[in-house]
Image 1: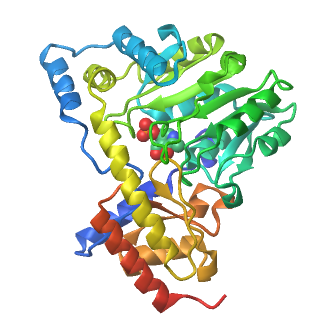
Image 2: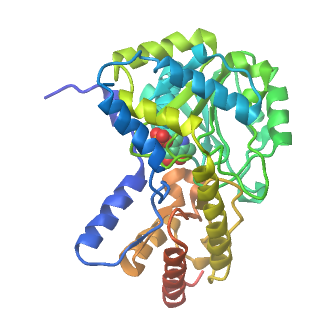
Length: 394
Ligand code: PLP
């Protein structure tokens, strides 16, 4: 018998990939499936970004790069943060990584160990909890509540901190809820952290450029008092429709940067060079494609929320960011995961059950509106038909 490290019995995964696989299987059987399950823009990467990667390959960018990323890209990230938020970040603290997830992985393995508590949003991106459990640390959910417009409550997060807390993970704009935490709440949170100087923060801001209703994204980088313990997670996947390229960046406090660099050296060595040049073109080139994509998501947001609120037993808050709606479906009488599964099998609409994002996700399903308005309309019609046929007595 092989003695695999027992930590692997605790590692989880993302059900979104299982739903994607099942949707593909049904499609191959000839079924017409509308996929509102997957969390990626339905746009192609803008052509000038693709061209930059092709040019880099043609120019001979075929070798290893520094583990931390090509210097010109790290400088471009620092310049972009200055442009977007007016914050000073040294390129020496920027790490180029293969996807946003890798920063999460690094931060959690850096702080997670038996006896340590790590706080994470629930419902939230499933990998937070999975990786916390893998390290043997105790996952402490931060409830993300519908009645609080899916923002986190500073008071509630602060109340969960104990001397065992090593790391707090925050995510705004949020997956799966589309919630955006207002600046005043973040101000209160940062002020309260004063009492807990030994706790690190991982701020997942991968949806930072996807906010609506004129709301400006509030980055945690804007608080100098926590810069010495803040890890910023961001990347190109969502903003530039580059999920398949695997490109992200993080900003680390100086004392942690070298640990992160060593994790890179011990695993993937560096991000492939042409992708880094694509990332450079994304940051330094025209930003119209980003604006157009976000404007299109905004239009679809209205369609999806209005449509959902007309369905029997469904109540949907208006998401303020990202590209997800997270309707409350409790009044349909269905358990959320059974509903998501029945919608896929019976109505041909892929969604994700809220419990796949944590126990506080019961009663909700996630719909990604990274799909055409036409498909969203057809999906809502199908869900409506399904619910009027199959609404269960409460
Ligand atoms: N963080 C959140 C909240 C996400 O939703 C995702 C992707 O869905 C990621 C991080 C990971 O992004 P990437 O594809 O760049 O690894």
